[in-house]
Amino acid sequence: MPKRHLTRDERAIRRSAGVPMWRLLPFAMIFVALLVMSDDQQLFRACLGHSIPMLSNKFAVLDRMIGALVCSPDYVRDFSQHWLNISVFCLGAVLSLQQLFWMRRHAAYWQAVRQRERLERAQKTGQPSK
Image (cartoon, rainbow, N blue to C red; front, top):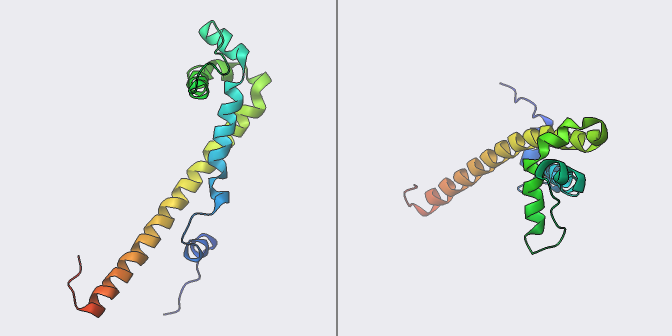
């Protein structure tokens, strides 16, 4: 029986034991879109009734990010002004879902490899495996 040819993703998984940095870029796109959204003072005035100060304490960035998530329906409602940031966020979300599936396959493959190596080491030493 001839061996089947590996797909490009399967070859990439077997080549690298770690996750390449470019596979994390979609997650960074989401984070950058949220940072841009949290910089919009008009969004906070329209949604919350007041603006959130830029650097009031060491958790100001987290406060602004949470505020941006809470006010995101108002941000999407004004799509004509924020279409680029909304598009970057949505594109990052779609691409990050694909990367999550790839990372799950990557982890499953390498866990199987490590388990096989553990069994081989146990057989060499004559110990029962777990």
